[in-house]
Length: 527
Image 1 (cartoon, rainbow, N blue to C red):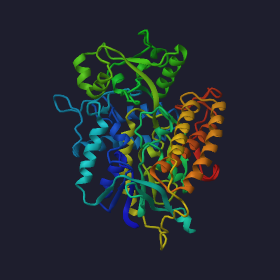
Image 2 (image 1 turned 90 degrees about the horizontal axis):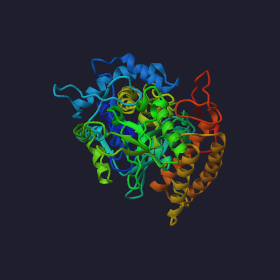
Image 3 (image 1 turned 90 degrees about the vertical axis):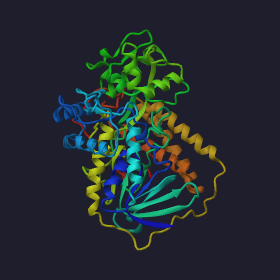
Image 4 (image 1 turned 120 degrees about the vertical axis):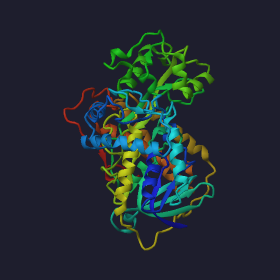
């Protein structure tokens, strides 16, 4: 079955829904989300959104902080317009009903996070993302020009190259999970807002949906991807057998939390001048180093010296989660370890989100825009989502539909229903485990080559399985996850230096010239 719209959005986090609301002013929008519409990384975000909102702050300071953390790979023009457009986007979120925390005089209650020189993070307690997701979904539900298809997963993008034309995108094949039917949705512009790829690692703060779908689909039709080696590991994820990688927000350190060893001694002052509020790449490597030196299972984030009532009111969700696991954060330090958190690379996109494929846009964590460079400044992620959503929505107005006269329906050929789901589960587990071991916080040529060898074999197995059996959401995600793992490995092999989030024992120094790692479909094996 085929349908048409003006704009097809794949993903329902802050970037996708913000784009949909703007684009609905001049077209019909379909939003595809593979589970529930609120099953997104945005919904899990704790800290907040960074913007120049305080009297003691300035655009110049926010720009400088972003560039410093990005370690030479940020695009200065992108950083500047994102920072300057940020305050208006935060006010727009507030106008939609996002209940940002305010002081007694009604001013935004701003917090500080790692790498920031000023308090500039607007938040709602410690569940900012959930509050933003709630408000955006409410606005989308009120808009009759936006249709949300939940429990649908995009399989592949529709490309004119398959019909002998230019590499232009005109929609996607989409699997309806409840029925197994595969639909073709044709659109003037297709927007990838599928988030990151944290599930490529066994330990991650990301939701289960973060399997790099948009990046994989874009690469398969010829879009360039960039800087996939830069995986941000959040340094403070709750260490507990029943915590399932629960994030402990950087805002705790922004409000005075201190990272300590098991014996109670602080250690971050020996790694960075900002101590426990250093940039995430530095803090994650420091924690990793402390764990390897001591053999301990975790380090600890100490909040016990702070006012009890303040901690409980400022971080109620984190405090309750810890309490459920037997940890009183006002009396006991919190055991924490690093986990994969954010992908700073992605589909190469310009200042409007336009990729290298006509009529295909990428925004949010799916994209590499040059804002984050080699390491993302805390809480610049939600900022990027709303700024680029607005810019992309303006840009797509001029998109002209490029499509064949007849869209070929999805062909399953001789594929049969799979009765061996264990194959998918085992391959999924193997990818995630060797990526953690070989492409983690500290890398080496030997580890990268081991990963490359494993991913080549696994991708062959997965390809055979994909074509032999009818598609399901599980096999679609596994196929995408394996391709994204390949892209991360290939990018890491090409970077012969240590910069930002990419640290390798074989090249510990930084090159004198900073360069992006850009991959093309012709550079590697078939997707």
